[in-house]
Image (cartoon, rainbow, N blue to C red; front, side, top):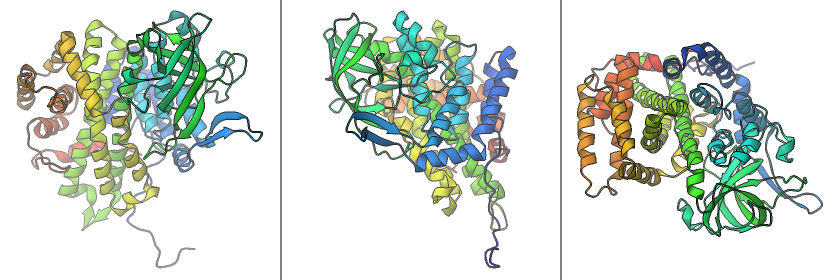
Length: 544
């Protein structure tokens, strides 16, 4: 029995037992907008089922357990045999298995697959973000393997399977597999052409022995890995199976697991190859070109993952302020808190709307859309992932001291928030990639301008921002030194154009006034007070 002095009042109820998909208006409207009407009913049912799982008490507990009990490395068995095994809490396997069964690795071969998967990824990452890493790499390995039709025929059905099989055994005896990736090394980092791992041809055509190290190898418990190594003909892409067809484990020595800021449930490792058996993917010397489509797909998942984290942070903040009272009324009704919440909601909706537009471009696969993605993906990856951390930090503050306590879940969101900005090339890499697209692929800029041009004339602040962007693009003086500023403008103009076309007027007006019109301070909660902020906040409220 509670003591008479310990009556609990004025606390928000847990945000649990709700449909994460259906409660997200920006996401549901994007699916309705971009997906073929004939697929909508099926997609909504699938996404709502996943949304109910993501919002359930059980899955939220799995997420907490997976992060409280991070993976452990066992290099040897009890007899002294080298096994290089990573052990996970059962909750991790349940999360990853649910993601696989929900189709988060099977976008490539079904109508509207990329849009449906993207929406599902946003929904599922709100429950627990760490399992998104192997889901992303498994999905993204498909286009790289398609450069070798024989390899694709062998591996693609396993990669796109909805069956999760966690046992380590030859891939030929599994109904579904998980893939990881190993590109960077100690001496090179993002400069993968500085890699020193050596690939020595073996007697069988297309097979090699790899010797060297990888500084970051993601998801080392996977069934296979795409890695880069120096073959006689130059930097080349290889497929490294974890277990060979004779049931022996490939030489895959896990030296240690990384002790990371966030993403604690997921294993990232350093590995050594020593005569490790591998199959070449694509031609020798074309490793970067072979693996680049995988990188592009995982970059999109960085955008999706950050959009998911922002959405969950904003949902928690709005939910808390809807129930919490202070100074004579609900926090959500206080003008200053309403300004903060509306500002956060704008950032979240802009991220979601942009991410879903990119996903639908993958389903179109026309020359125009491919050119658009070439510029828009690195720009979005740069900007959306960088906005994630300030959004998570401000949303945490909305809960006050409660938000700083681990039980609230907000610290886990905050620790996770910088990851997607670092993964698959940090900010400068993305900015320079945008410059390369502008300089080498004129069709990319044309496709981008066609996209933003569809909203011209609808908002004078957007029109002015497009004009200023064109002036920036025409001035090549010192272009590399101001690349970040240029890419920020490319991203925000694109977000503004999408919101003007698709979002409610109150959302588009507030975004254009602040992000494009300059009527904004240096912190969240500095929107013009004359805007309809109550409508913006209400739109962001998750209905449990």
